[in-house]
Length: 295
Length: 115
Image (cartoon, rainbow over all chains, first blue to last red; front, side, top):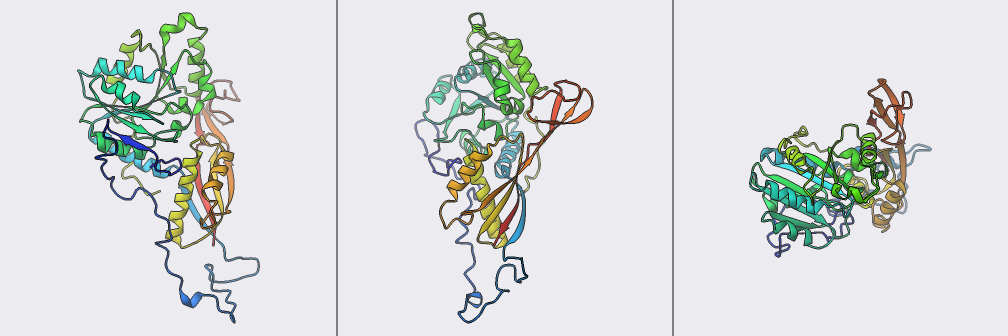
């Protein structure tokens, strides 16, 4: 279901057999309207024409200046449900020793080409699985499948980001191998995916040199949420007025601990450093909050 | 535009609370929104009003009260707690950019007025 508006237009399509074989997720995933659960009205409290009962309301009493309304403390994080799914995903990934990377960027930064080159370089050393997120089409997953690895396309419909529940379903369907590398290509969007933890070990933000140096300042949330920034398309630097040092300076202003690698997926420049970064990354980059609480 | 997702979550949490605590109508919702919480408040209001516009919604016509929390940081250079307006502010005391954000991330439903 589309988590943006609940319209049900999002889909997870494993190749051509879209929707078929989609396993049921465990437990209830959507709240049912309260009407069914609400107790039937008690006839003894129904209004009577010859009686005004100030004690019949929810507050059970009446005092001047105090209405029947009452205060309920909630203290719940609005993203708590997403975070519960994210923690469950993180636990699953840790148990299976799967390194999950959430690749985020603007549209057109070269994420898919980067993934293809990464897969070609690493697929002989460990199993690789890919989850592709786009609003529409199966084209990116098709490009990935051409390398020979399994890829699952999530179409978010009108949605602007992947959420942890989509990844939970995708994990059930994709069933990645133990000790594999799971690459999640998020929807091309530098805004919304920053807020949604998927249970990944790291967010990797891709910035290409055909964009502006000040993107980290314009979209700070994403650069703050990421562990690593890949500055992509560096083979084009001789033809552009892009100052890599300035882009790195801005990125570190937003996130002083951000790691940065200059790279070109097309020419291969910087790829060995990126591949070493993957090899040295642990699936358990975050402590697991166990068990996920109901908060 | 992830505010629609957030508005849907707010309503789901309220509906959950309504079932657990037996109320049928929400009059006011207090949301705590930090300076760095990735949410545009007016977009959130618009989305929330849109999904509760039907008169049978338990939050129909509910007032959204926003508690804005400022951004806080800790300067590793001068070892001071400082206020921030953006996540990339220089330290207002020493001018260094090594400021870690320590507060202003929250995105919570605090309290409801119900009947």
